[in-house]
Figure: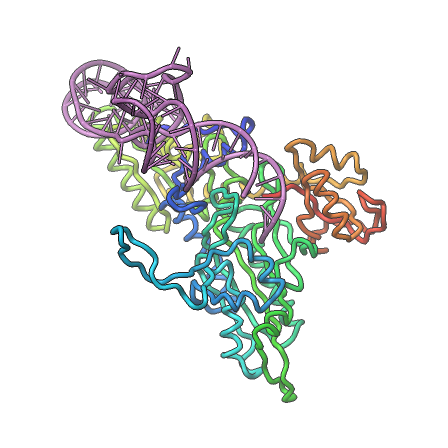
Amino acid sequence: MSEQHITPRAKDYAQWYQDVIAAAQLAEAAGVVRGCMVVRPHGWAIWEKIQAELDRRFKETGHQNAAFPLLIPLSFLQKEAQHAEGFAMECAVVTHAGLRKGADGKIELKGELEEPYVVRPTSETIIGHFFAKWIDSYRDLPMLLNQWCNVMRWELRTRLFLRTGEFWWQEGHTAHATHAEAQEEVMRMLDVYREVYHDVLAVPVIRGRKTANERFAGALETFCVEAMMQDGKSLQGATSHDLGQNFGKAFNVTFQNKEGVRDFVWQTSWGASTRMIGALIMAHSDDGGLVLPPRLAPIHVAIVPIWKNDAEKTQVLEASDKLARELRADGLVVKVDDREAMRPGEKYYDWERKGVPLRLEVGPRDVASGTAMAKSRIADSKDKEKVPFENVGVHVGAILDRIQKQLFERALAFRAANIVKLDTWADFQAVFADTGSKFVLAHWDGTTETELAIKEATKATIRCIPLPEEGLDDGPGKCIKTGQPSARRVLFAKNY
RNA sequence: CGGGGCGUGGCUCAGCUUGGUAGAGCGCUUGGUUCGGGACCAAGAGGUCGGAGGUUCAAAUCCUCUCGCCCCGACCA
């Protein structure tokens, strides 16, 4: 409603990001709770769409949803040493239950708990506990669960959607009889994430394996999908972990195999969070505000009626409502913007900053000609096209499909223009000078020491070791920093 | 958690140096005129100046503490 200024990307990318979120009313800092956010209805509607797309695919691949406690006994966290170490610093802890009125009349804490609870930063431990209870035979496997929930990580520095104290996500947890089966699951879910990013968010991603240094605390291997943002930085879009038997051993999750031999289960976990909304914003949005791919847009079409007097108003509103009814019959969400106090131009800006993919203008001239003026969110403001009232659903559907496709292609082209293979340290440093970043495919000698030295020197990190299927490698070479032998190129970038 | 910046009607900010009863623009409400890319006129409503304590006859302003937000770093995904 109120006019919002959006800082241009070129001027201040971080400020632009915040402005887009505010202008589209996606979320805001809670303020009263440090580092936490309030997701406003428009933001949550996008999340619900993402959830629906993921959830459908989880079910199609045999998973069931369940729910586990928000609070985890502190002792659980301690059972897997690496895991505990990895999350120790960011755990919020519940130490008291109940309140009472103190001597000064103020509310104070009452009963101290014998064993404190940790507010879940992730649920491997508590789910491990229940897996141990539920799994006894190879016939109980595989166990394929997922939960949609919120988690808390006490981050020192937060940014809306990208890193907040509390965030919403899904975490899949599975147990298998063999390592091979678990490994298959890890890749299957990684591909689910890739599919949703490509087909729904219209954001191209690169699948890869994390280095030991970047691995999930407690995992054997961590895989990820990495997406390029418009400033050339990378954002980890989702992760899928091969937990090996680490949690099986920590929580004594065992089963008897066909031969009657007892063994620890092989587990996986995989997750994607509200951070996906951050990826969406930074991949597609522009200086005019939010840009949403049609498949995620809570509102697909905004119809703006244009009138000068009551007679025209009646006429254009009637036509607009009719169009809306037809489009809704096709399953689209349509708003007829009949607000009296606002002129058409202001309505255009309003829907644009909210990311609505398509606007239809319906004025007296349009009613006379039986067509509406259609304006795609990603087209130039002068670039409007006529859409006939007749079979409007077919035409609008085609335009929305086209926008979905254009967004993906635009993002893909941007990434192609900003991904480079480099073989000299000087070139490498030049790319990451100041605040610069691209996707750099370069050789690395495989040691954590070199990885950290490169980070120290350039702030770029190894985002992943791309899977062979990504087709980004071209054989062995020499490490860009040390000159030592390297088997393959890895992906470097600054990251969110 | 270290360094820096900022908290004043819904929003952007002025006022603070040099204490003296809180301002502007936008937005909002009402009425009217407008309406094909951010309209205009008129009349209104709206603020314990982030919070607590202190100094003072008097604090948005000075001092101390504290909370929150933003940026850089460290940590993290």
